[in-house]
Length: 237
Length: 337
Image (cartoon, rainbow over all chains, first blue to last red; front, top):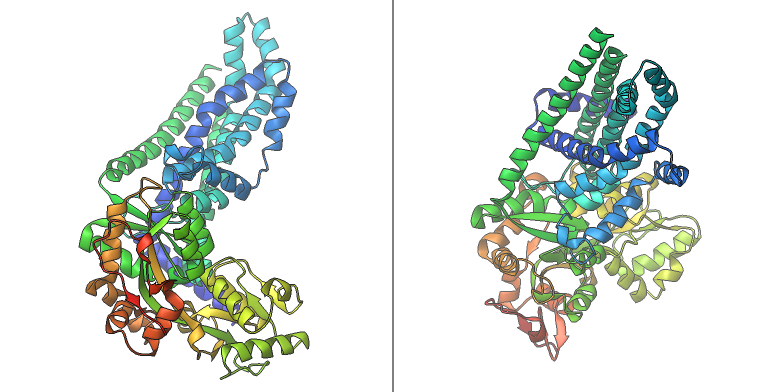
């Protein structure tokens, strides 16, 4: 029984994937979209902050860095709860109408990964900053040119920051379930079911084959994204 | 140096275009579709949701009939009500009269209609270590306490403020125990979660619990659990589901849409959808339509629904007059001796 049960689940899961079950495809695409948008949004504000933290020194810099570092491991359910309280129509940010929407999940995930992006970007720039700037200067570069040189040397670290952020976003459950609500109506454009919320639901309902199929897909996405980033990084190096 | 810089830029460009392209297309298709749909958000109980009735039967049929899409947010009855009080829902479908009254008293809910019923059951291991099979609910609970204290039985409570949990607490009180006291005892366990997960847990530890019939049957027939129904008799086990519309004076929600749902659910078509759900797959009904019973005004079930589902306000009603709001529908009332 023990292994049969699992193997059976895997067999059916593979069947579901190979036959391209439309529900699974929809959930997968939504997951990529939601977390992709979250990553883009986070990049929007994390890049300038991260670059500023990495390149310049100013008073309070260490406090700011410490702040982002301490937020690196914030539990997703805590953030989910805070966001739920903020985003319900009755809450202070209720007017944004983000609760139980894809955009709401994206927004929540973008906050979740902001500290990751900022910390990774800042430290990858810091790692090359002194040396490269010096080198560029001795070669006759101006301030701006030197900064560009620093940026392009730390590009692979920045890429890693983006990849790690995307992978964290697509794999989290707390925000997706509390802000998204795991809504699914066949053929609807307003659903919010993503890979993680679907997995927990199918597990709860005992539909193990679906849960396994979604698990395999989620892992594949995370691995694929990491592999592509490795490839790009090795080209960049 | 130049070559390297060039290939760097090329790779970066490819990466950026890839990501932007994927996200852009997805974003566009999303926003263009969004504008066309009218959506109602309904907060509801996990016991109703876990059976699939709402998503698989009601939502598609209602969309066919009206073009309005239904989004269900499954939580315990308590959390579902809280969700509506936070303005997140257009209506709620729940099963805990005391909490429903509170919701309406506080001005959040109007136009309550009873839509369906079934029965709670006490389920447990086939070999029934506490020997409760066939007893009345109250006797069964007393027996479980007795055997539990001896270490022969485990009771699992959802303890999540749900309708099933509310019913459980009422049964404990009826049996002469204080729920908040008894739940501290070592044979008494709390899951704090939905019906499906609680049944799974009970199955693993061979424990007793109170379940709604719908979820139990689905889990049993799907082969997820092998617990048996040990107590299913007794009028106090009746489980009554009602829909309550969010008061439009409290929140600017889609009142008209929610009223359309109320009308559809209590219509012949809606009642048929409820009654037929699960018959093909499980060989028996998971839920029974309530409107027909109320119209007939006779029989045991009718009296039980009035006793456990109606609200007293001189006369018993499924929705006393003060909680009605701009409703062109009929509300059932009854005189009870």
